[in-house]
Length: 293
Ligand SMILES: Cc1cc2nc3c(=O)[nH]c(=O)nc-3n(C[C@H](O)[C@H](O)[C@H](O)COP(=O)(O)O)c2cc1C
Image (cartoon, rainbow, N blue to C red; front, side, top):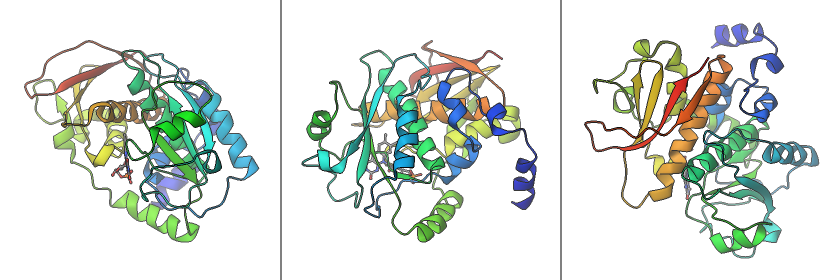
């Protein structure tokens, strides 16, 4: 652990290292994306305080910037104050949150994935500001949130945003959560073209990015991502679950953001395309990443 942080201290300044050319917001990440991914955890109890002016301003700036989505659609987000919403409908799951981030996806073939990608970036940025978040896919009143937005459209998911209750305990819990994440092993998620499991060693320079996908949040922690390495390309598939429709697609967008941002930190860039293909298992095709530089 100590060795790791010492190494980090000697790396290039963040403004050089964390530029993601496809996303203007890449420059606003000052912490390594791997640290933010490990630090993030679903936070459901907040301390009831409003965002400070400084935090709100930074968050607002990030939300409004170009999120560089994989398929080029432009989801639009807004910080919504608790006071602006009548019936939250979060069914008691979320306590003490004074703000939410909600938005609309564009009605395009990959608009929901792009929304998942962009909201996860916002969530990672909020994590950098030491704010708590929690993806909420279904347990909120869609009408109340639609009314609070300045524009119309489908809201695929939202997140509360605020200060975790008892920061000291929160810090300890976050560290515990990062070490004890309940996630599927590599052998169930990542494969070679011949369908056999891809090992960490075989993944080589892509190993960290895949590990960051493994740590990603997903609806009901279902981890539907199944990824196949094919030369310098990765094919992303969904292991579908009944009744999870758009949630699966959000999960894939979240995976794309962890993959993309981690590789961008390593100076590796790629592009996303749709090239439907079949695998032996009954999986649904999502997208393909091809290395460009
Ligand atoms: C698309 C999506 C929808 C989710 N919806 C809910 C929800 O409605 N209510 C909730 O309490 N958690 C929800 N979660 C949070 C997951 O349960 C959580 O991410 C998962 O259990 C992993 O835990 P972690 O986020 O702490 O790593 C959702 C997560 C995602 C990605």
